Amino acid sequence: MESYRKLLLANKAFVQDKVGVDPNYFKNSAVDQKPEFLWIGCSDSRVPAEDITGTQPGELFVHRNVANLVIHTDFNLLSVLQYAVEVLQVKHVIVCGHFGCGGVKNAMHRKDLGLINKWLRHIKDTYRLYSRELEAIPNTEARFDRLVELNVIEQVQNLAETSIVQHAWHLHGRPEIHGWVYDMRTGYLKELARMQPGAKIDDIYTFEFDEPSEQ
Image (cartoon, rainbow, N blue to C red; front, top):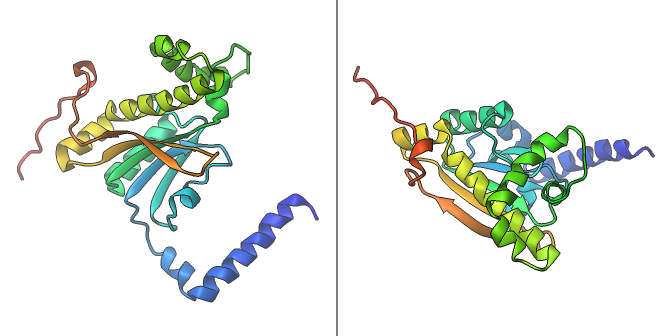
């Protein structure tokens, strides 16, 4: 059997399993989505967001890219963020990295990888910012793990620096931003960072908004 056909068979088993428990499962899930969380994670196939958080369809709005980056010129990410914050009105945005991340690992080296060099450049910038701390770690694996963590922390900061998040903070007092890392070796999530609405950021990144006009 060709490997892709296993996916189609697994889908049939999935449907039968869900309908066996709740005949209206798919009818109900097709009505609407009201997720409380936006998940920005890595594209790595070993980090399934819903599985590791125990969430059901409709609970987690998901965006994934290589190394879970929040880049201010990435219109794909920004479109997801704006929709989640302004339309879905999520209460929490979670950036989740993971130990063993191939994107972070490749950013630590000098090998030319083609187009993805441009993407990994953002992780190299993080390495440069924290080079003193990182290069003081003698163990290569420990240094790798720490860069994974620092990358998450920087992406949390990048989220707070967007006008999308700041505008939602100004008008609605949400969302909270969280930075987590997933350890594939144990299955556990680790909290690294948390920013409450209105958290202080560098002045140069802070936007000023007009007050809503009275009707």
